[in-house]
Length: 384
Image 1 (tube, rainbow, N blue to C red):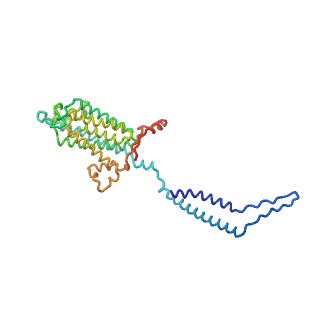
Image 2: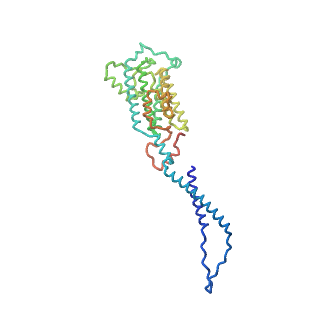
Image 3: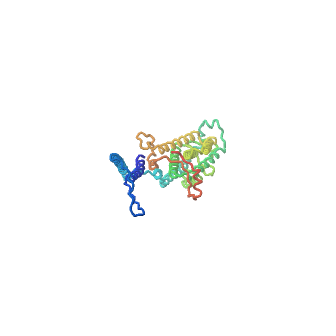
């Protein structure tokens, strides 16, 4: 700022110097006047100032001119130095932000394949553990405190799946309109894949009996490998939903996959929506909370299934975003969050993301120029 002020003063100084030089130049003597008889008239002589006054004034002008020239030379040297090192002065904010939030769609594709693999692997594990679920007549449902106080409502599980479909649909639409959808997308895919991988482990190591005698389980196939493959494909085609009539297997209780999707969808909606959309957040929270409660009211999962599903989903989401949004933690020596097994995957996905992802919406396709100005008026953003 000081250099720019000095450069600006350079022009003022130059103008002042030129004015002094002009005023100190001796005036040109006028031509002698001629009269009718041809003899020129002699101009009237003006009294000359004293010699000491003239010398003092000239000395003052010379000293003033010398100081001005010295200042001018200093300013010119500073200006030339700044021009030589202009790379250290110019800052382009837009390019810096763009470099700090690279899209890297290929990493998003890797995260999507990771999530897809774990979702398909979940259907395989469900098919395997279905064969070892104990019969209801041999192993009755385990005692559950919630079931002791709340009777079963048959249509409650339908409400759960409808709420889940609405939340997933809302989040997908919101994600499509996000400007930084590549970064947010790979975060979502990674968390989905990780949570369902955890679910495969808990389902496989501990097989719980059915939580209610109302549940109808498909017959066991034992060594029929072809039949198991067809069951896997059928479960995948129906999205693992009871609404589609494709989920007739039992054993996938600990922990609840419906709780995972209801909770995770709301967390992403809440995290990547602007503050002025509070009504939208509250609506999604009601859908998520009522869907989770209806799982218990339908008696399709034990209470421990829902509690563990909620706990694992929220903690994994918060751990990941704490590390993603707090860049000082990534290389801190005492950061215990970096001891998670998925920290190398996190570093791979988030290595080039150097700032908090702002909430900025943009059209997924290019808009006509007449519509862009109108859209900017309703575009939301997060204060960084």
